[in-house]
Picture 1 (cartoon, helix red, strand yellow):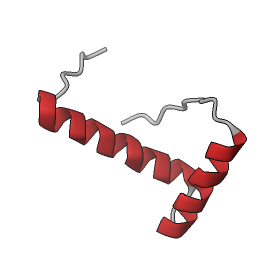
Picture 2 (picture 1 turned 90 degrees about the vertical axis):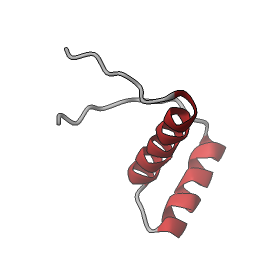
Picture 3 (picture 1 turned 180 degrees about the vertical axis):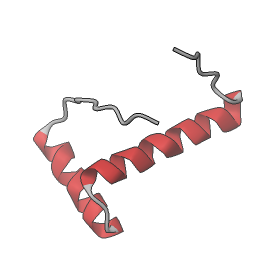
Picture 4 (picture 1 turned 30 degrees about the vertical axis):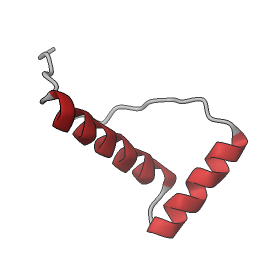
Length: 56
């Protein structure tokens, strides 16, 4: 699986809070974001079914 980069815009206050949460969990901010994304996808799929992915 290829690892892709994604750039996001985030205000200073939210980024500071993200770092606090990540530090508390013993993770980097990047790892914390990946976990939050994974959890959001799992929650969506529980409600709507698996998201089909088109092969490229």
